[in-house]
Length: 378
Image 1: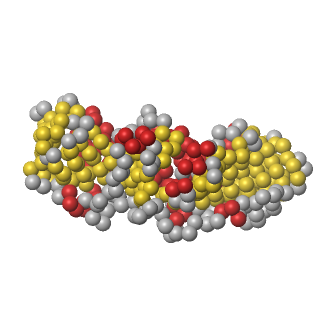
Image 2 (image 1 turned 90 degrees about the horizontal axis):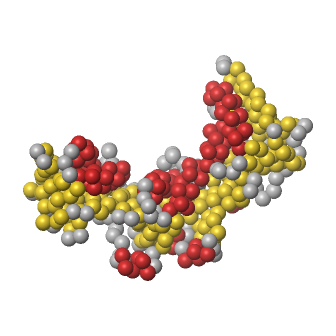
Image 3 (image 1 turned 135 degrees about the vertical axis):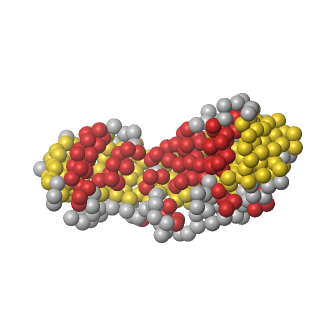
């Protein structure tokens, strides 16, 4: 392998793929980045076995070849270079890097030990024609990351709950995440979803969605390509000259529709900004009491309170429009803040069915986004 590339392009590509390098992988090669010099340029790849990133970098290819080298060391060295052109040359299992008066040699591992990452079977021409490929708006991915993915579990005891579930029914896409204590669901109507049947039932790691959002946010592309490999439970997302490869999570995802109440006894409409300020204030005292805050609706008053045995207590009354019965309910205030930070609605709605049933949050004029939070006994 022998290739010359621009330092800024190589530096950017290494920074992107290094995001998924396994720092404590079971295999030494997982700490490496794969470099493949092909006739159309340099291909960089890294994976942690759950997620992988492949990046194409333009360059002058003199000799084709493949090699893996430590990702962190190579990325740091290339980032320190001040020259414009970097030369990469493989010498056995070693990579020699030259840039101006700077040289370095990195000990590598043969590319045959690097995990096989699926490749798209589509040529660019076929992709443009829409042959066997799904396209989804980059903005939609950003919305899913902000409005839904936060509710996925971080605890690996039930792996399927660390993911975001996609469901397609006709021209509607429903995206759901839950950790068993709270739930976020977004529904989107679009005629284009009728052709996205291969997404139906997929559960993708929330980390994949967040990484996709980062890639989409840094790209000028309005759409991203999706190709589902049902035979090995993997998905490729293409954004410009970058690919993200993700595994699909297995397991039975909860039937969340059964736990979302269809009716309510109490309904409160409040300014989102007022509620954020109130929850932040009482949350100071909730930290010493398992993050519990209480919402009380009584005599047309909406009260938010928290009490700590050592720090004291706080009570806030805010203006609200109320319908139905008086009542009270307690939540983990962090779950409430996560929802409030996920929505752009100026006014939000809380629907209740007593203090032991889940509370449902939604925007006053936005029925597409719903959050459910399980109550806490007090």
